[in-house]
Amino acid sequence: MISGFAHLLVSQVATRLVTFTLTLLTARLLTVEAYGLASVQFHLINTIILLLSREGFRRGCLRVKEGAGGGLAVQQLLATTALCLPMGFIVTLATCATVPRLSQEPIQAQAVLLQGLAAMVELAAEPLFVLAQTQLRFRLRVAVDASAHVTKAALILALLRFRLASEVTTLCLAQLAFATVTLLGYATGYASEGLAWLASHKKAGLRQQASLGKPQKSLIDWQTLELCKRFTLQACEKLCLAEGSKMVMVVCQSSYNQGVYGLVVNLGSLVVRTLFQPYEEAAFIAFGRQQDEKAEKTQALRQRLRMLQLMVKGACTAGMLAAAFGPGYAYLALRIAYGIQWSETQAPSVLALYSVYIALLAVNGTLEAFQHAVASPSQLTRSNIWLVGFTAAHLALSVGLVGRMGAVGLICADACNMVLRIWYSVRFVEQHFSEAGLSAANWRSLFPSSRALWAYAGWCSASSAANFQMQITFKYQM
Image 1 (cartoon, rainbow, N blue to C red):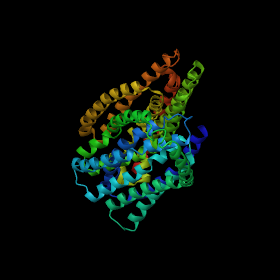
Image 2 (spheres, helix red, strand yellow):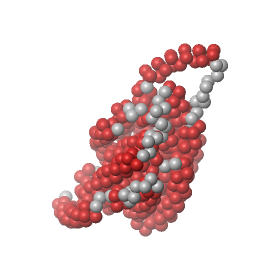
Image 3 (cartoon, rainbow, N blue to C red):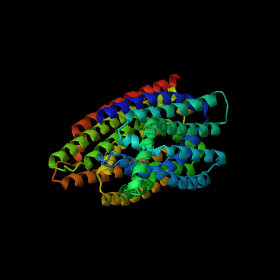
Image 4 (tube, rainbow, N blue to C red):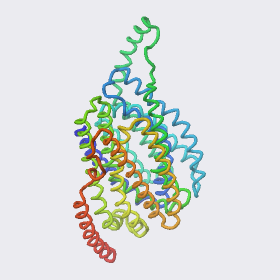
């Protein structure tokens, strides 16, 4: 698992560097309004469709027991995951009809339909993606992900550079190309295995039909499907938690302000997507497979606790690095990379605050990965109830702060929401291990020591003061 994560991480970093360079060049060719349309409204359409349609199936099917690796288990996995397609079709119709009406500024109907089509094409690859994850085929995922992102970024840059299409059409075609490459990549990766399975299944099916007259088991794993339903309900709540800020921006702010917010979120979340996303996925798979093991002895639980402590502290340390350097270098990064068009807006202040917010994202992602991997159905239901309250508080706080503070207010609301989710996850961890008699599992054991935090705070203060002075000097010399 560790070697697979390391390979995934290195490949993700290389891919993100290439796509970041292409995206950086693209941002200079787009107007602020067009960037807001792509990074907020189009992103919201795709996220709503994909998260509601596939997240529950992805989480549920990734908890399939490792020992169930036979041919029928693979068939059940693919058939169960494929149910996200009809669900995705319904969600796509509802999303494409609703989101444009909520926006303050009109969106082209053709653009919305293309975004919906791209989401459906990407959903078609979901069964093979889940199969690749359960089989730990990290290389296949890295190759497909890299190809899709590079294709999307290169196509946007080429179409804008040579003015072959309008900004809106370019963004939609690029998203469709991303989805197509994703589908073709996974289909190609499993093409040989699929043909071999069809050949063997045809012969075995004829023998089975002659002897039994009907299949022995259903293709749908109903136990896993029930778990998928719970995760789908949780995905609805997480959608409001994760994308509630963008929903508020679409309803309350102009495309220009959406562009500023979108640029900061895309730039600030580069670390999250590159480092913490594969980190969380590896943690979820590792803890999920440990949960499937029947040896729930004290020694096994202690090993699980030790792994959790190391992973949370690792995520916390990486997040604190972003919080230390981000605020001081936010203005300089925007000025050098994106030019004065972006550096003289609210973007530097928002990016500085988002750098601190990354630390909360890192800790919460790892804790929730553990929670989702080991929680029982009743515990997941209880977690969903708490998330409803967190969602309501987050949306109310976002609406109240966006009018007064703009994008800065949205980041503050997101941070408050993340603190609540971390608090609940820590309570779950303490309860999970205390029931097994491990009293050492408290919140202090999950985070760095107080001395390390104080040393870090002093270092951040000195670094921020020096960087602020350098920012002032640079600003007046330009």
